Image 1 (cartoon, rainbow, N blue to C red):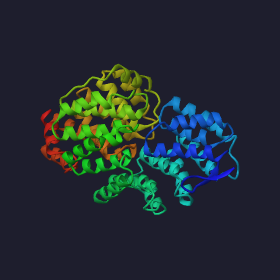
Image 2 (image 1 turned 45 degrees about the vertical axis):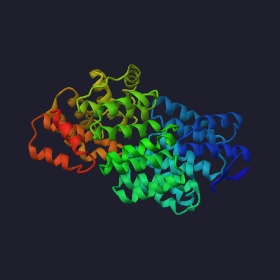
Image 3 (image 1 turned 30 degrees about the vertical axis):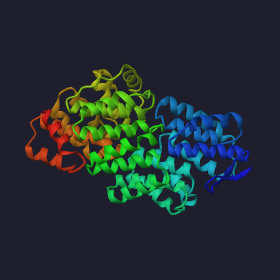
Image 4 (image 1 turned 90 degrees about the horizontal axis):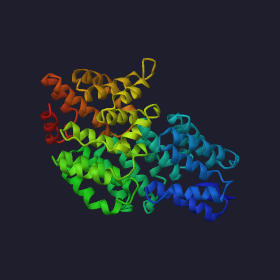
Length: 426
């Protein structure tokens, strides 16, 4: 049967009950709560001839950004393909996007969803997936453009408009439009106070403006609302950054050992949180060893190369763990024949720094710096690179004017105390 979903998007569904359950999964994914994967798995079992549940399940597996996840996603898409009808435009659009993502063509997948959203701006699933694809490939324009173009199609009285507003707020923040981002994130939280993504967008605004005390208080006060989310560990990570910027390294370490390390590092999202905070603390003279499970995950993924952003954190984590051979294997994936020489500079610079080769590290990271935005991640996450470059430059005896230039790059993003501590370690 043809059914219109909860937000007015037409597609196929075997029954209203099944369609409503898929709507539940989409809403849970957008609000980052519950178990959307369990919902779609149940629908796959109960409705084997319906294309959308295996497509959504494939998206969820692709989020893992691992070879195993891609393999499972491919099988799910094979299942979905046989059930897609010519009339089901929604399933066909999502299937094409998921196939392109599975093939490693993330920009083309984003373009496919963008064209679909041009006709169907109320497709919440497409909005969520499209913005995440823009995030993964470092497309700042579409990180904002995807939700911004759709926002006018949502009534101010709809709570789901808050979801779209929170997405747009994050895009605005990443484009440097901080006052507008703060206003929109605040409005999004008025619509959905527990929305972890809108919370995350507002935390980014406070981070970029150097308002660490306000940011820390905001996250602590709101944590009962967003802590049940499967995105919570990243908001705790942001609180740890605010702790660092207030010279509270013990507080940041406690958060690392607590809610940041609590999730198993089986997906890259958690690996990045756990590695990057350890690296930042290490830059400031506080060493927090990697747990064995995290090291084992990194060792198992040295040859995957599905994401430069993830490989950056793999090199950082393996270097901290003293796994030099594994570091070399990751970097070897971007050898002389690679079409992304800046990536090799980036990864080699992190490896050189960990080995105490500060002058080469500064040279490599300087060579990579202009291309860093294209690796994905947020500006706050990519600060790991700039902070490492600053310390490498200082430790290698860099000129005072060069150090001052690097500090001035982030006039408010890093507090004065953070900068002083970074330079004090030299």
